[in-house]
Image (tube, rainbow, N blue to C red; front, side, top):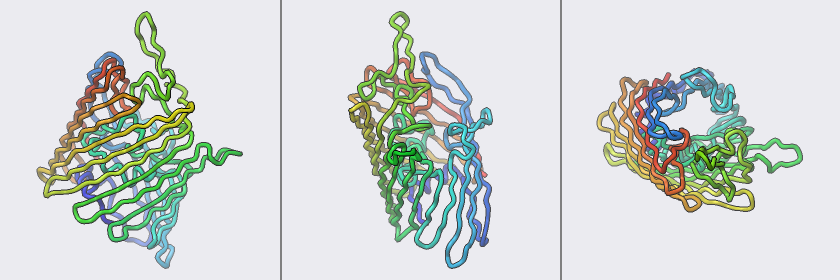
Length: 379
């Protein structure tokens, strides 16, 4: 299967995150990624912090993937993938044992049909173009409203085509499983890509009805705004100015979230240029708001082991603006182990408490910055 040039470059940085597929008729493969390091943030809730953090450059995981040859070109496939925090050993994804992926399906020359908790099409087709995120794992788009961080949907039926002369497409439907209301908590996602030589293009659309659970909305923590869809997101103590997040424990009830994205990349010798645009519509309380994100940047492969990545994002939402720059240097110690240094700087418009990538407590000012040194190993 032909990959995009950005994906290929990212694989060089990441090392072999997944082992080579077995050529046996039936096989089960164990794989994983471990990422850990130290991060400095200049302002989180009014103070700086130096902290241990993990799963940043690449999410910590271990998993099992398998195939069984059923004959006649048909195979049974499955995957069970668990996300966790290396610092304390606790499970991620709300404590789900296999929160990263859990599916079973059938595969033949036409593609793969699978059922379970699965990555959406925005992840399958658009995440590779989040060049800032490859530079620094913190540099997802504001609040991950456009789901470029690599998200999944539960109770899903999914189809992914095989590569057809560089063209690939897919679709997914996620059941809400709510008695008497087929629409509630449901979701769907579609996408496609085309790769020809050094050029790669892709597009995807994902819609969630009544976003909930780990994808529920906590607007202040996500983007640092004090209003959202016309609703207050914080309360402020008039005496001290202390800010209390109104949705830190119970998510805001949002009707729907729909995100459209297009992206592309082009490789010129050692340089890969990448860019994307996403348009997200969020509806609730009788209102609709729209977030636009424009991102561009590049990866320069100095040597097979050493690479420099940089990206810039501009975001517009409900009259607010964000400008963010990210950079990272990655060095492969081996095919499976690398060390890296990364940094981000975000400046938001007046009245917004800046927060990088939904990763830290919002700043008490319009700006927030971080620097990180880390290590990643895959097996």
